[in-house]
Amino acid sequence: MKRMDREKVIKGLETCSQKTVLYVCGQCPYNNDDSDTYDCTQALSEDALALLKEQEWIPVSERLPRSMANKVLVYLRHEDLVDQIGYGHYEKFQGQEMWYDLETHEQFSKRGYTVTHWMPLPLSPDGSRLALS
Image 1 (cartoon, rainbow, N blue to C red):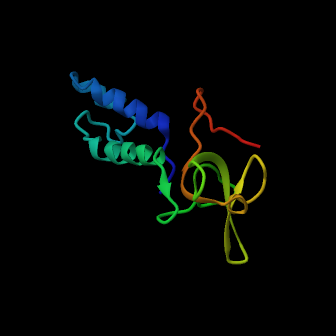
Image 2 (cartoon, rainbow, N blue to C red):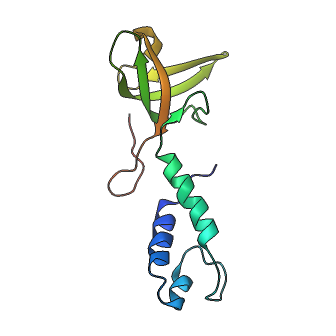
């Protein structure tokens, strides 16, 4: 699934919410037709749904981060301790799947934690991607 252009989705939703006037559709970023009668709702709805799904916790049993360079939020389970949220990095090396803590640079499993869910890092307040070291 392609990463959604958040600004395009927001502009499309704002434009559609003002559809009391016909010409507004011409200002919609989803309008790829020169006429004012183009119905952009299906494409906009699909992109808005995909954008919402990017903000949900993803079970590791369903999908893993695409790239080993991805730094993500992780949901951690421990059999004896309280569940936690951390910053993680997924890696597959010589057939082994490993999750690393970005703060301590050690595997979560070495401290007894299992990563059950993950999600992409949120955008910063100015809309840019957050970068963790």
